[in-house]
Length: 627
Image 1 (cartoon, one colour):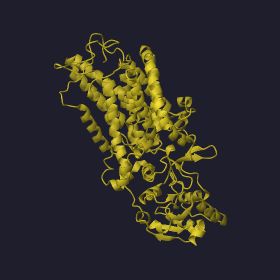
Image 2: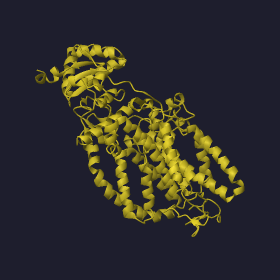
Image 3: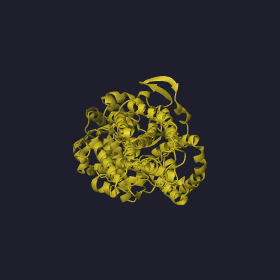
Image 4: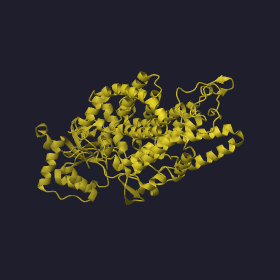
């Protein structure tokens, strides 16, 4: 318990007066250092009668909050789309559907040739979230990948908040309201809500606080083997959910350890040995379990070394601004300060940053607060990227990101996402500060009510402006009957490729949804995924385009039909043979006319079937079969 000195009072720390009952002290709670003057005794904690369980009520509140965030998506579930997700919802639904297909047909869960045929896609090198998509295969098969998508997001947000609440309640604060506040912030902060549009791997983070909980338990040395085994299993599970959050969490924990170690070297000496033993046990459990998946990810077919991307740091003003889907924000102001609506990774708002600065000064003597402040500052500094940008203009100042950008794994991370590390640190600081306000109010009852009122107003002014609004959703365009009614079977054999025009990529991936609606019974050329580019096998978005794909993309972008030469016709035939195509399909769209004219020049006249234009290319790619 937190008391007036460096150590807890021997009797009062174990239990607190509760009307004749003695409530057990949590298994372990660190002594953060002196906060109040000696003699004030242990921290006050609200008393709750038997049978009242705040944890359940808090969890239900988080679930209601998650449904609020996706309130515009759940009605009409079968045909709704998160409009700010770009093409990512289509990609994620495709991953869930392809995983279920692999499970049912007993195929390799780490690879598929249903996309980017015939080269395929390394699913382990993509964000397929196998840790959830595999066990949720029955849901995907029975109700479709859209239901799996929204279930993972909705329940994942609630589970993340609940997990942080449990961690705070067990190890940081003694009462449930501060823990509820911290857990809610950790799951509903602006950066998390931004990713909740399109990136479940960066919004569904309930395993991270469970990992931290085991690390804390290891410091006691009470059950090193047991906690080490559980830690190893949790790390394995997180790797199968998403490796990037694990890297970000590990970075934040390393910075916290440095800060706390400098503030409390006496504590460091006592935890080094049990932590080392526990981590060794965890490694012994986790490494054999993830060795093959990681080998496949980094050396298997269609693997890549690192992800190519340009500078992606936060604008300084993004730290103090308000996100698009925050109560005080809008797209007009947030848009120019971020990469896109799914990457609004900062936007904590200037009132919250002022409050954090005040809390840090007030509680500076507490080792925990100093360590949390270091995490927040370092993470924000890293998120600014290799060169500081202010209001869209480069300042010429070198950012701290260059210190780590060359390291393995870090070179593939979008540096703007490092503000995600700030979220749990801020959550812990807010919870801890709230607990201290409760303590002051209990120790000085005559000023308790005014103090809590002032604190409530401060929290409202800091947090209400960044509270989330429901995410935007709209009806999805209907799938052409050619795919939804199985008319494609007249033009392509199961397992062969249908080349959709324009070919799916990160800018337009609707054809991947059509393929899912057709039951994944045929393959697609190219697609939206992460794969190798060039001889150095650097990671890029989508397939390396074939010449015909590039030509059709130019037509789409220029809105003008291409002039086709005999060489172009022969190249198109070669590409169709490479893709193992049976048909070329042009779906509805704004640029259908110039694309149809171009395809007519390349392949001859097409047929209008089931809402799409179709070219039977089996005479070109399979002359013997067609004969």
